[in-house]
Length: 78
Image 1 (cartoon, rainbow, N blue to C red):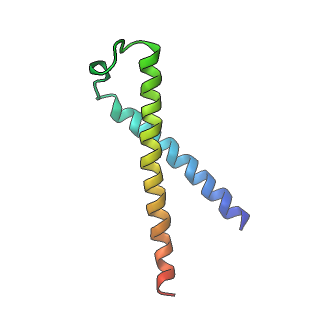
Image 2 (cartoon, helix red, strand yellow):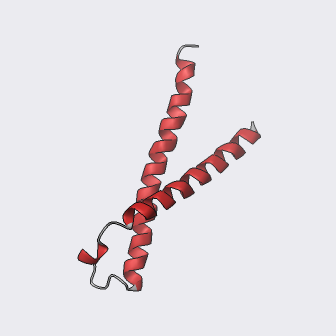
């Protein structure tokens, strides 16, 4: 049973890192310079990192919840 927790932890970490990368890649096309005073400044970069992490967390949580819920459907008919 403990091995299952380790596998879930690894899967969770991999999915989170994957979606952070995808979100960072997708946000590169977003024009932050329209919303911040100094788009090349450190505050703008920190904002970009925070927005990336926030969006990636939401997307990865949705993905993991959907995956776990779909795995639990098999117990519906047992």
